[in-house]
Image 1 (cartoon, rainbow, N blue to C red):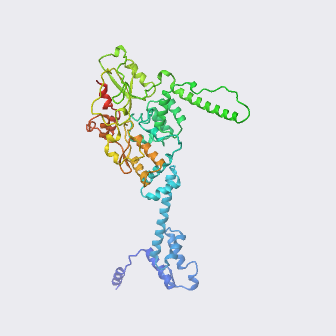
Image 2: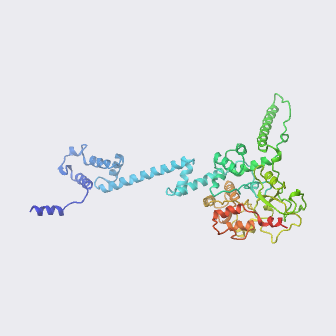
Image 3: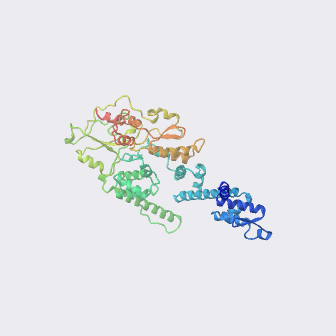
Length: 503
């Protein structure tokens, strides 16, 4: 009998957990008006049910003991009643998940605000992209920031100043130094001062030159602007007579005195500017004087060829030598090169006069310049001639007809994606500040239009064509894509001046 009774107890064993039994017992007790003591039902009275040991109080204490706040438990009981503990538990879990998501959202916002973005901008980016993909949120924030920074501050800066067709424009002439795709962040205007100073010194400029340029151009200036300033200062003649200060006795009354006092202050500032630039010159012999237009002894597309020049006696005739370097090299470089090559003066040529890309170069050689003639057919001289498929997608507000200097690196996919997002935010033509942002990036990285609102960097074989090399000239042989761009950026311009130099 005992064994049978024991077996019956085993068959009727309840596999519910103690927590579930306790919750169920609470529900039963609340419906039947009984209270539980040590698992046994005890009939209660009205006084007992209204006391602190009521089922409602015990139910609240139970869920509070599980880690939920009393406020949430009370809210869940009010919404779902005391009968169904499972519904109460589901409600509590739902409340907690919502609270956790809100906390996570707050942490995400605090994270990006801590990176320097405004809270309003972060909220807008999170609403557009959701909370799941932080990379997309960051790219959107960077796009917003770039658009804000690109808003025109000075109206006198005309877009033609950035065109590769503009004489005397030095933008991007120093992009031929060895670099990789990570230099994009340094070249852009968001770089800090230490990074810019380090980058300029790696380019060959002295720390003093870089410091003066950063002081003059301001902390938000780009690498291109800084190098532009340094080279302009090297080329300028440090003459205080350019800004003479008239020796006039000021009147001590009236508005004329104030005007002349302000004029004197302006002239003092300009003289101070000249003194800063004079530091970069040191000696006038080291200053670099580039021709304008930069056509050397003449190019096939321009008149007035120079057919005679005087060479040092030691450099006349074979063996012939031919040396090429960037025209706007750091101060003293060209004089040093010339000194080691029989003091032959360099010939400076910009490839925009016979090619679709601007490329300011200097050549020291002892080749004869008589009887020069170009090779036919002429290479393409505009972007659309070189890449006719781009004409279909080229917007009317992009005035470029030539590319800037060929670089040793290429723009990243993230940059082209940011440009696409910036343009797709508008149905028609984008506003002027967006146009300026896009054009600045296109000029800096030689981006061409390949689709609606889509720009792309040049492929290696396209660069080969611009420079006059056969297609796939740098392909294979252990050359990676990065190596191909680097070798092409550092190569000779064989189209068309190279052949024109060898009669």
